[in-house]
Amino acid sequence: MNKRDTFLKEFRGQTIGSVTSQSSTEESFQNEVLRPVLKLQNDLFIASFINYVAKNKADFYGYTTEKKLLVIENAIQKDIKFRNALKGMIIALFTADEYAGYINNSSNLNKRMMTMLIERLKSQVQLFDSNQNI
Image (cartoon, rainbow, N blue to C red; front, side, top):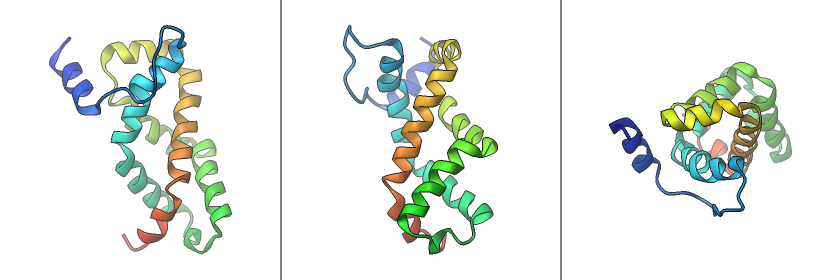
């Protein structure tokens, strides 16, 4: 294992969730790679979404909580440019071997990635109100 791979694995931290011999390849990748990366990058995702809102949804802070949750979901699902930027923030923290595994099943892993990211941002929707003036 090269220095970058060792650094990334130590930097990201341990597996989040259980991985057993019955775990599918996707589930293992999710718990060993995606969850730790999403946790590590959380502050960057929050800052990125605040920037997205500032540029694209000026009235976001006046929305009801339900409407804010819809905006979060739609931003990630339908704004391809924003979605790709978020994917880049995640993929950048893969090792070369993890990336090789990712490209073999990128469609399903992208769905998992974005679903987890949407839920992560939705669960922190209250942070967007307190960061309104950033």
